[in-house]
Image 1 (tube, rainbow, N blue to C red):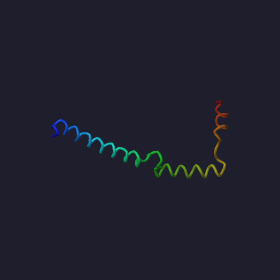
Image 2 (image 1 turned 120 degrees about the vertical axis):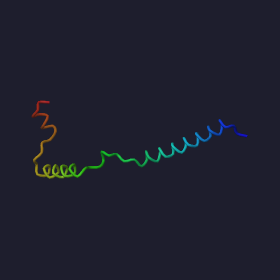
Image 3 (image 1 turned 90 degrees about the vertical axis):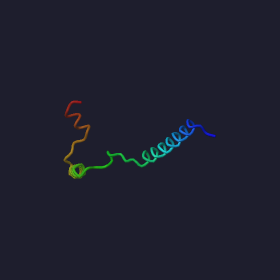
Image 4 (image 1 turned 135 degrees about the vertical axis):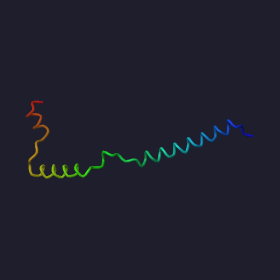
Length: 69
């Protein structure tokens, strides 16, 4: 026969297992918000690509030279 304390411990253990399982599911299916662009970020990104293709950008190494870094 199981004591009240053993029954409570068993219940807590089962709850913790369920929580752990839920946590693993969340961690597996969670997305990184930094991987999603806002509408404004997408617009700026597309504009930057256009400027890059048109040669209106400065390379990082050239910028460093201009700034004396």
